[in-house]
Image 1 (cartoon, rainbow, N blue to C red):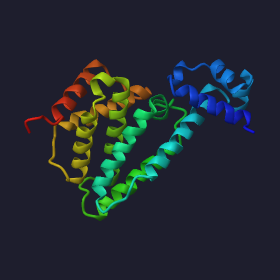
Image 2: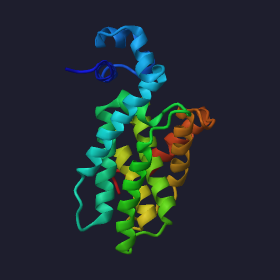
Image 3: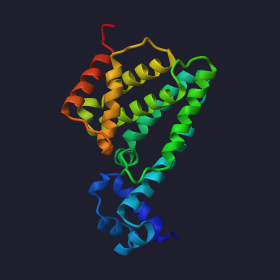
Image 4: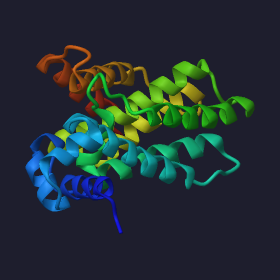
Length: 229
């Protein structure tokens, strides 16, 4: 038989399947979990504590999915596969993904470090194969920041940034830049910087305005492959 804590977590996850965390009331959670309002505070301290616990569950699933990615003889191809699986998870779990990657400053899920460690391990394989031309830490920061930025843009503005070719374009430019595997395209530099700005904006840790969004749009459009190339 499930405990009150388990029912509350399950109810919150179910509600997140169709609406954003900010739009979910504690009353709706309690009604679905069939518990009284005080139970949330006894189990999690407050609503933010509950959301942090749900984000941690989301990261467990996210990381389990990452671990299932195949390991081949081509570590750079494996980086692309990992990028694509990251995007697929975000698109399949839009509200949960936003909760995971736009946490409150005081509630950073510890699993973020494991996600970073998995990426650095993949980059270590690239370095061992002589296919990394950027410092390891910088390469990891660039890839993860761009990957998250692409996902958040696709979820927030699907009509403008949800096309699969945008993700592929940024993926190939960023991974190519750190591994030397692709033709270097300096046009994407502005896109990487602005993806970082976007993440900062959505997490409340850095300012950005409409000018930044416009510049990111231009950078991504310019970097997208054209039919006559």
